[in-house]
Length: 281
Image (cartoon, rainbow, N blue to C red; front, side):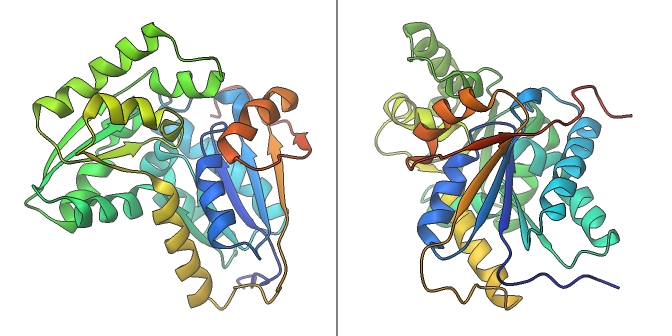
């Protein structure tokens, strides 16, 4: 028998680190009455060079934590985990008897990019795991099979954001090499295929040019979450502001310090939790 979520329950959100806070920020703005519980798996960051099996196992572990704390919906605010684990995680949650939707970032971003492009040339900047999965190719071409997609793996771009250190000339040079194939392909729309990348959005916009539209997951996900809650009749009846709280698997103080810049709101207390740091069997 499937458990029925409560409308007063929180929305669970997770990412490999602080990057998903860019998604949470948009959710907090779009759905201010809702409660949110965010889990950053910073002890196992980055996810971009993890295998699909690892990402599936990690996602299941984190979903167990969020569902154990009553989440009424789970948002996978990580492109690598979405690309490799979303289908498996949805099946896992359903098999566990939870009547909870699982929403990832790739599909909404892809649809938004297809709607935005004028030339039909779209670029993707993403982690190695996300590019290797082919998830954006499938999603974009399903929305419009005539689109020409150029995907670039950016193995070190998330690190620039996660570290929270000032951007250096070496970082700029690295970002320039990642953007070069998109400039050569003359894309007019670029998907930032990692939730950490909005932190360096201004840098990427400068390198790609002002005429290139940058697509991030936050706005698209907020619309998708709102639709899912409405369809399931799970929108809270609260009229005031909801609450938001944080869990992380790494250093809680460091997470709060860097995360506050991504969230653009007070972080409050971040609670540490332990998950296995070794690769699950």
